[in-house]
Length: 216
Image (cartoon, rainbow, N blue to C red; front, top):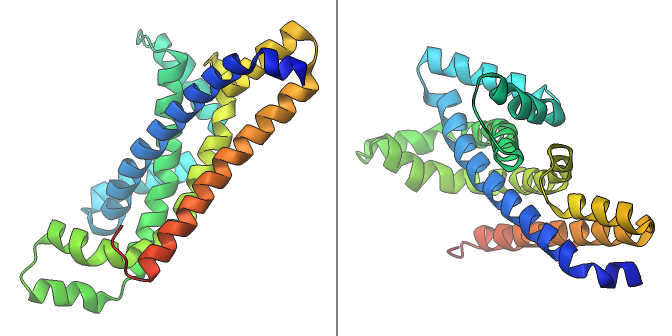
């Protein structure tokens, strides 16, 4: 464990990058997913077709392939991009496709009578969605959304392959330098578990508040 103690600061700097990357992915991916899911339900036929193609193609493509396509593909088109930027784009597209399907399914599960009642009250589309539909869909959205967030944090370890200085990158470099990998990888695993448990517990807390009608 002395190796971990001696290099703890470096591991924490890597963790900070992992948390920053994960937060960006979750926020951007969720934003893409909300608009994507609503577009799949309410968009014009051409928009629905494009979004369906995006969702099906991205969900059917391994995340690592998407990362490499962005990281190596954009420079081939004379677009400079860092490993961090490529990771944010790739993960956000991947998360957005999954969240789009989550939103689509949850909103579709809200009884049609709720939409009709909102229309009868004179609510236009966005107030209807924001005030009536999404709040009722939220209990359905939360569990798979939390699972997606956890998967994005775990998947973020793949960015070591495009030289992003995250927790896994720091762990690998210290292990190579010290020749003592086991305590370092055990520590990295423990850190990922703690972060993901925190996300999961936050999701459970949020679900309970919503179930009891407590404002978030």
